[in-house]
Length: 263
Ligand SMILES: [Zn+2]
Image (cartoon, rainbow, N blue to C red; front, side):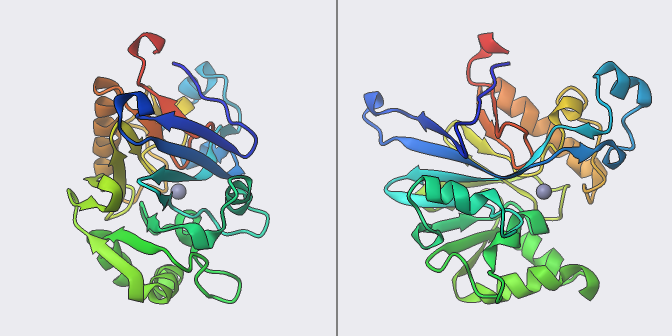
């Protein structure tokens, strides 16, 4: 499979090029943190499999977000952990952008490594001009969790309540972003599709293990049976429809299934 290597803080790809007469869509990988996932997070991976893959303690991974420029708008997908030394702000800087330039913020789900960058240290919204989109099932599930689990989600969603838009799966959101059902990792986990781009959130945490073994879950998957089904489904459509996959825990940001001969 062809791999796309990062260019400094951000990998820039041009898609749906101008030759077709259509406006271009640009997707940029914003790597918040390059980090391996401990093998202890994948208890279903047998020692034999782990050994056969040459893995020792960790599976290569990352914590990432993605920025898309389309129709003259700036779209951000997730926000990373929000750590002071995180790569999201550096990535925006390298593009000559600030958080205030983001028009639309799309959330795959409410785990802290995805919504953590939405508030600053004082608890104020970072993305001051963004309209925010999250799935209704995700919102409902988190609002009803025990208080020891949902404090960050409640604080964050409340801070954006005047511009928080809750969607249903199948809805077409601004800039023709389609919200695709991918429940399992969390109760409202969403994959976003833009043309031949699939921004798939936490479908995969460690591709070295899970690409060929989608039945293996990370312990982060809240409903493991549904997560396996979503992982198999997304891999199937990515391969069959030759899509470019952007994943929040892919070590190189992208998996490119667009050129079948390259697989
Ligand atoms: Zn995650």
